[in-house]
Length: 326
Ligand code: ASP
Image (cartoon, rainbow, N blue to C red; front, side, top):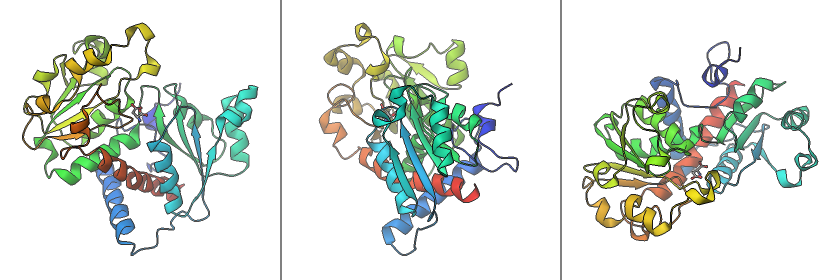
């Protein structure tokens, strides 16, 4: 029987070997990764310590789906730690000649590499690769289908931990296309592990399993499900907005931008229903005027670019953690 994605990511001594999912990663380990990211942030900004921890190491970015933030951020993170980075060009590779994924992986392993950073449209692909490696390379999940986006979960947690001293007191709403969102799943794991108790999920009925369905109780335990955003955002300290993942939907199911914004978009008026300290987050890319109004996305409550900045430090911390122990 296959080991679970969670078991797969630890070696025999219990050290993190791959990062596939945040599900089941306990609080102490999560805090330690975030502390390390915080230290990376400080050292990078102060420029006081050499950060060449990964000199002589090679990371390969294997992105089967488009990406702006995650790929650039992994690339910068590895380079800032002194590693060599290859951005594997799938469109010009033998993948288009029909080479299988595992043949590609084993070919790249034969050239010696220490880490594969993998984004794929199919949930489970990073775990599949990790199970079939022939070397000690680490696999870092950069987003697989709607399953997980662990470094996004970590960077969102870091962003909130830097803003609020007590996460357990927060009321958080995650709003948008929950069904297709790996970010929502990883954020729920990270935030619940860090003690957030009042976690609300809000989406159109077709984009969020009902709260009593097995899918919701297994995937989103202890979350309150809303279909009315005005109610869900009431008194919240954090609003995490999600992109409508049109590439994972039938064209007929995609709502008009105006209708969607009216019900599920974050306008300044709707934000006024939240707590006065409410911050606004979005993993990007944003569909402006659909998920979020310009004045909110660019306004003083927005942490969107702070999330981007923290993404580099989180990825530095994860790469250092995995490759130093590999
Ligand atoms: N960039 C995030 C992801 O890859 C969110 C999104 O695409 O909507 O999951």
